[in-house]
Image 1 (cartoon, one colour):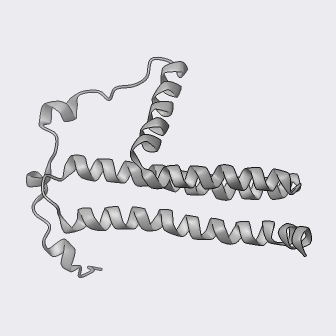
Image 2 (image 1 turned 90 degrees about the vertical axis):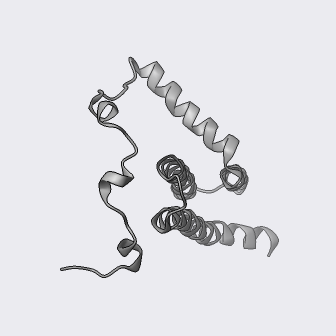
Length: 150
């Protein structure tokens, strides 16, 4: 089954899009020598995201605030876990969005319609996860806040 897509119609031949020459494709991937080095790379990725992505900093601040409010309100361990999971999904989406943006920027010399689609969809995933996280927060924290002020 073939799907008609006007964006794909503008796509050029694969050979013209190649971002690596044959020599670099055949080179073995660079791997960390030990677990300490692996964690160092992971921490560098987190630091890069927080240093370069404003929305990641906003989400991190919201996550810390949500956690502090959750602890202050005396949420049960299960409720804390649900709030924590919702926050983790938003941060994870933000990290993946950063990956998509970096890869698209690396691979595209000119702005291509599919590059815009990739970036927009990744940003949409962050937005969707943030909206769902807020809904979860309201459902879990709402009754506690109402009891406190009601």
